[in-house]
Image (cartoon, rainbow, N blue to C red; front, top):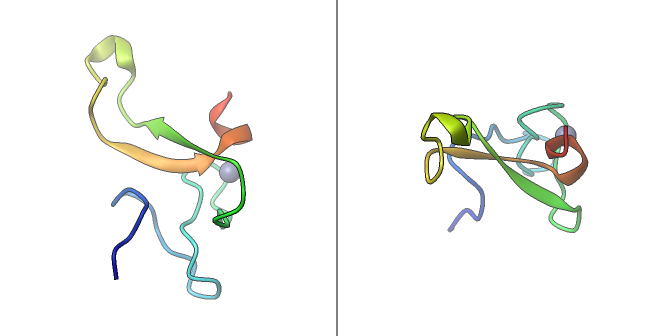
Length: 60
Ligand SMILES: [Zn+2]
């Protein structure tokens, strides 16, 4: 089955949801989500690896 989230995310074994890379809690499909760049854009991270995070977590 195709996965709709980045490879860098762990999966919560109980819910099957990807875990937020910042708070390590599950990100349900209906939650507001964001993609967090692992490499800062200023260092050439644009287009680089990203991980799924809650939108509120990614705003920091
Ligand atoms: Zn989070």
